[in-house]
Image 1 (tube, rainbow, N blue to C red):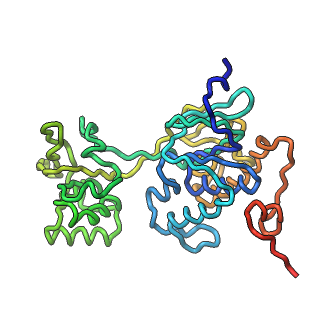
Image 2 (spheres, rainbow, N blue to C red):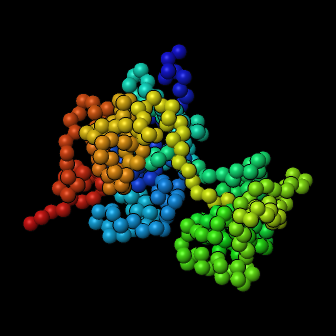
Image 3 (cartoon, one colour):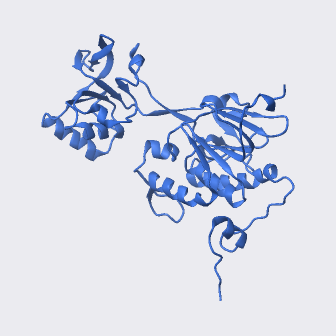
Length: 353
């Protein structure tokens, strides 16, 4: 049995892009200009990558010709820009398998079992897939999804409930402010009396504490009490070594996200300090047809900037054309003047007198 005979009902495409952050989205655009179709995978459930996940509303000032924009605005504009190319997105799917087949094509399989056969693969995975930093309390993981939450999917679940929130960043403070008045009680627990959140949020939180609308405890959750298969309280140990019992029905933990290289480490790619080594002419890896763009790659002089990633996308797209259109010479054309590119973009060619 050959490798391809073991593959069941794969999606065949010109390119697979792993990562739907700004660089992955712009890779769609550069491929589209060269008439290559792409499927885009991301382990997150939305586009925008680490920018949207970590700081959706923080200003970005170094995008050319855009004086300032948020990560959300940048993502929305990139999505609008690539609309003419009709990319297919697969959110909530982590790329788990990547291998080169005997016929030269690349096989990709995701955590949901989706299979692809592509002529080129672009790894635009930022610094890897993001996973929530978990609470290190023995046996508490069994409550994850029922009483222990690392992300909020449905805020209505917490209405009228006793809530404990752990963390000192924007997410923790934002959910405190959001749930006060809706939940029966809100207690914020943070290991120190200093925060990594917006000053206005911290000020508001302290005002609510002064008004007895919520509570703030300096300390860390070190244990819990279980009764009839449910958590009924958490144990919070302060800097003074004293452990206090805090009744609760739901525990929300916002310790931030940690990047993990994940399955990428097992794909046979040349790595240096958990980054993928590429050349600077094609941004190709040691596996022919596999490219790496954005923060995931490394080369002499590498700068981790969105701007740099955009540049890498353009050169990688032209290099990929060697695999997608091996019999065709791909010429550099300009979106300003090329009728062919105007047709691809679905815009009219301007006429100048």
